[in-house]
Amino acid sequence: MAAEPGMRARRGEQLGWLLGWAGGFLWIAALALMFLWRGQLLIGCSGLALAVLGYGAVLVFRPWRAPRTRYWRLMILPYLAMLSGVPWAIWGFGPEAAGELNVWQALILLPVLSPLFSMGWKRWEDGEAG
Image 1 (cartoon, rainbow, N blue to C red):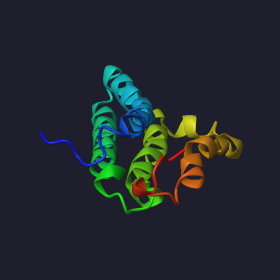
Image 2: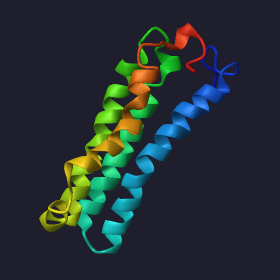
Image 3: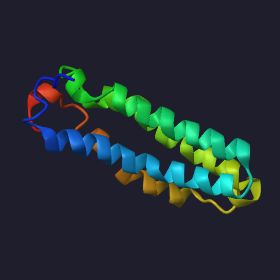
């Protein structure tokens, strides 16, 4: 397989993109496996599908494959997949568990969404993302 342009020179950034998103979807896969273990097959399989589809979006929208596209555009589908894991998890735990949630718990999304603000307007061709 031929190397993509600029692949070797910026290997750390590429690994950061791929492994960072992998870590972001890990919680969905782990919860899906727990739901499968508990016998909730529909919820468990849909969670695994969500994690696979989300990480598939990460692979399809790699910034070095579209070097002139701004990062925020490349992150839309992976973020939608990751954030859709929240209602999926609430569905899995049931409505009684959802009643224990409060608005302040949504603050956990601020660090998750921070790349949109810190590097969202940059492009791969601009050089180092950091």
